[in-house]
Length: 177
Image 1 (cartoon, rainbow, N blue to C red):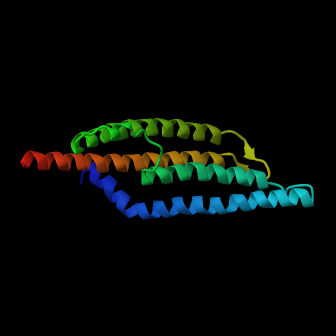
Image 2: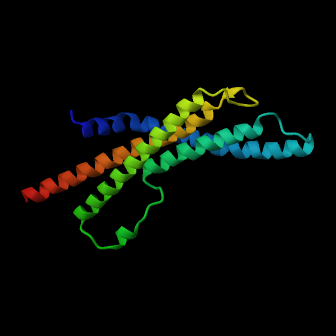
Image 3: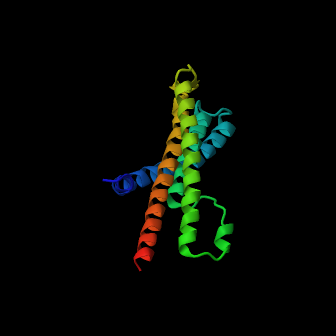
């Protein structure tokens, strides 16, 4: 079985699970952060002190929402893109070639960032830093970065394979016709 079939097969089998996990994490965070914020404000004005760890929990949840939410937009291909090329009238094949080139560059950037973030995570893992009120290692916060960028890299790879297969299919049908 070829590499592109493995990637698409992995997307088919694990795609709904990844989608569910991404949406669950962002959904919980979007609900919990405003509750934490309102509770912190009310408690600060009533007992003149916020409960221990509320602010840190909010920061932790925000980091997970940011990186996993970014992966969600990458999966749905709704991230901010340069659409100037869409204004130029091009045929479908040239447009697909441009998309493959753009996705290849994006994949290379994602892999580089993932490598850097993974190196940072492994370095930070050896440090004794903790999230103060909970006593959790700071790596819990760093995992959001590695998870989000890893998911973005995976989604970019699946989009690239899908686009390249569409281009190959289009080229094959044009060559036969």
